[in-house]
Image 1 (cartoon, rainbow, N blue to C red):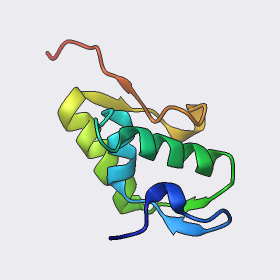
Image 2 (cartoon, helix red, strand yellow):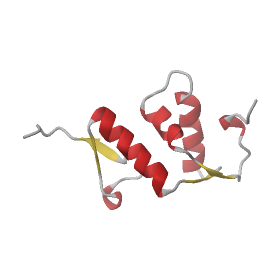
Image 3 (spheres, helix red, strand yellow):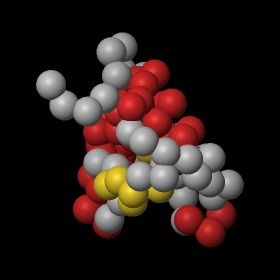
Image 4 (cartoon, rainbow, N blue to C red):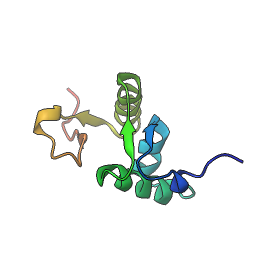
Length: 91
């Protein structure tokens, strides 16, 4: 059995894969709450999380494909949003 996401020691540098973000965003019934708690630990600098452009691309692609989500430029984000729903009607 692997390391539980909730038992990652404080101060650990850890790579965060796309599934963690997607489980939170889509409120996964099994993993969603644990992943949300883990992301909160990163926000509070208890754990140091890293992602790369491939993870961001995968997350944005999945959100765009599954819920028609439009990415928002990073400089206009509050840090808690990475996209907003695109409500425009296709032409």
